Length: 350
Image (tube, rainbow, N blue to C red; front, top):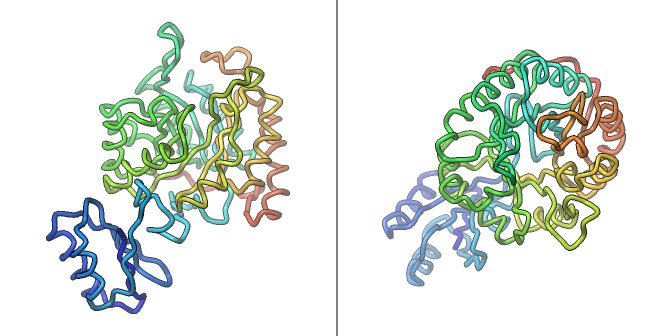
């Protein structure tokens, strides 16, 4: 259920509505827009409460939301959520590109790649310090040391950083060093992790599970939002189908569908979505054309010898730079801004 108030309703009326809701043992989440304020009720509301709220001063309407996800729904938050991180806006008219290796391998490696991401026009450095792998004998990442290396590289080159967090126990340490925390496909329904991320205060990029429906995906985001963290990005990274030519099947339709159902920014991952280097560029462009707010792309200076073995889906630096030049031309056609010639920014604080 949501309560819609007039944009002219004074703050004291809104707070009185919140007080009545909370008195019934429910949670109230307030979303302020330019034309109206929406108060979402979390919990089971009695019919008499809806009638009571409908009669209160400042209330224009009370609407029952049938979706299981409330806070992630566009019904609750009609305007797009825009996440601002140290001058980078995600979810607005700026196209955001996150680039870097699958895993941090050494200080020199991540520093070199950070310089290349910055030179190409990217805004965010990606890299894994903890790697959830299908097999137990595969490279699992270098841990906290890798977080420190990536934070230093990002600060040096004026890039935001994003890294994957695997367990609730590692949320705090990852949040200390990274600007954005990523939830991988295997952890989309790790509900203890999602609850912890709801309280961490850092933006979260939530990857879709490789067999998840849209409803399951948005309900996973709901866990983070319900915990009090409004800064959630949805990432389409490919789903498992019968096709074996590609690593996964990138669901391009997910981008406009999720934007219709939800107000959260949608990011596309054409690297994992295809698993093939030669397909990353066309699917990145297709994702932008479909309306994605950003891309997360694997790039490595020596992908054929990467420690994770994911080199087949990683772009070489020149391919990455060429792609971003093409995105600069494409972005305005779909109402986005992307400038590869931005002057190097000052180091971001971490």
